[in-house]
Length: 431
Ligand code: CMC
Image (cartoon, rainbow, N blue to C red; front, side, top):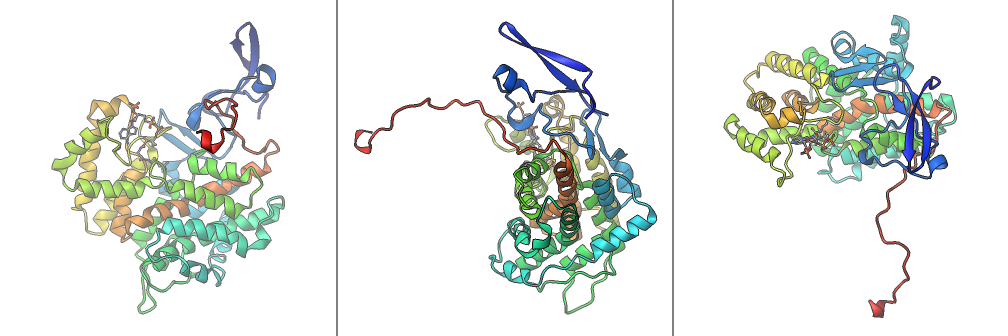
């Protein structure tokens, strides 16, 4: 972190405190309060971290007001159109775009680690068939620490690298097998002659009884979905991974924690919730009813796929996702998809409504991803697992950055205690 030439002054009663200000390469300045408690004996209060930077990072930058998302400085729309997922993985992990040779080596490394330990199949079989694939993924990824002992020492740089490649390589197999298990079909093993996205599609949709040819259009669309979800700076699941790993936990345990957090409908679970909502709306004439419910403070319903903590302008990932939805549905010959029709009308109706304009609520990445995934043949329960497999590289990159950071400390927030003060225990007969 650069030296702090500026400072802020905090006055509490008669005392003043100088707090250093750090200037980032992009984004707002950051007031450094690390010494505040030691000097002034007060905590700061920021539930949900709305104004708190929990770390410094060089990986991803978001300008929410302008709708900008950069990975290592490269805009997401350029990466989505010109690059591909494994190249973006390399960029996130190592900081620069790879040379042709580096990319070839990286792709080969990932491709050659896609198989799961054979014993893990029995682990799958312990779940109920109707288990949500996210529940299975949380369990299986956490269990990797019981299968890959030689990559759990976080203080060994080589082991960290091995764990990173293992997680990125095996996550499509883990997700595809969670799906296969849920529909009672045999597990399909990965194939090293296929690219990352094609391999995943084949592991989901092939059966041993007949050949399965991967449609290159679908493979490209799948790869783009992976790319659009690859990282998103200090979001809830990434912060969960960082917090879990701050205790020194092994990488598989930390990524399992990230998957668990991602599952919630306010985060990665929104893609499943959004498609279910679009289907529940069913036809454009019911849109006003749902918009009214979303605006009603007495109704917990929210428009899923709308709003974002950071984006107060359009989500750049949603723009690419919407284009992709149009292209994919047209190429699949399903451009008259009724769910897409509801999505487009709902988007237009919400954007024209003063409630959404005043609160700066725009469609987010989850608004259109489900439409594409459903057209590709995925059930809604697989939407969030696909988000999880895509985000694994982001979690890993942030985890690696954190472990290598000499400032790394156990994460331990403070609190504003509003409970009872000390009181004497009352025997049960006297209560
Ligand atoms: N529908 C209706 N009203 C909304 C919505 C929505 N989707 N989102 C926010 N609001 C209202 C909210 O009621 C609040 O109103 P008021 O100020 O009157 O109390 C105001 O907008 C601010 O909302 P907030 O909950 O304080 O904002 P937040 O930053 O804490 O929450 C969010 C962000 C994404 C959790 C929220 O917008 C939401 O629940 N959206 C729906 C779920 C969703 O699509 N999540 C995916 C996020 S993008 C993918 C990812 O990162 O995982």
